[in-house]
Image: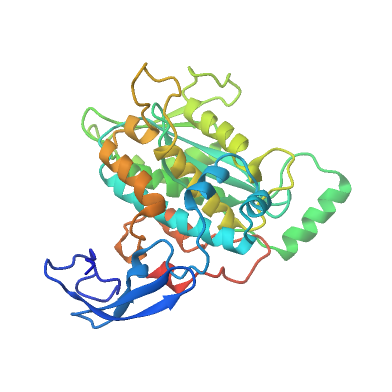
Length: 377
């Protein structure tokens, strides 16, 4: 008889930790075309029934697909249409599998963050792209460590188009912004969310100040100066803000190298962020899912430096940031083949939870995004 680490019912007393004895009793079975005969079980505490598939990433799946192949194709710059053609699957099925992988990665990332032993300066800068059309640019502030290039958190903000426009473009912009209101102060809100989470992850301590590196954008300075942690800082809880000109060469000696580096990688590796592309985001929530999977894959799957010492295993960015190697290996194994992550058992930042629940708003779209019930369990 199989053993399970917890009861999948969020309201059960054994949802956090199950007892040592056999608490799940066999309760019949059912047959599927995808997996054949599947055993059902019943919890002795809440009497809720579940199956062995309940804990699988393939839960409620009607057609199995190779999940590692999807991850490899996504981070290699392949568009969704190309992936669906090459895998011979529909776009809806592909989006569903990406959502599953992303939620799994977010849950595993939250576990790894709690065990991070390293301390580093933090770079935060906004990656600029657009959603639905170029009249709705997006700015994605990414908190990344300055030396290990480890992604801590990221957010999203939709704003109005800026720069030079023709008279016809200005007229169209006025009409669009009249019909489609955008969040006021979205840029400040997104920067504040990433900064606050970074502060929670590595708060300032005696002889170890929190060093924030950004460019010279005034919005960043205003948010920081209004932050309670900045206004009430003491000799032992120092916050240092280091501003760097965005006109400086983007070399390794630039203090903002990590932000410049991840901007380049995103522009290069994700099809919907290429310059002059037709693969732009049509949906912000889905775009943030794909971005999250890429960034977290960058942390735990990609080597920190390609040229490792001869015969040595190349470290990942997570290992360089102080994440134990055992947790990194667990991330790699559990991303596509571990126990399915449950939202009720995760401790997530506000931005990560918003991505999980697909609550990012697409300009011009009023209907809420569909999210299956099992994703909220």
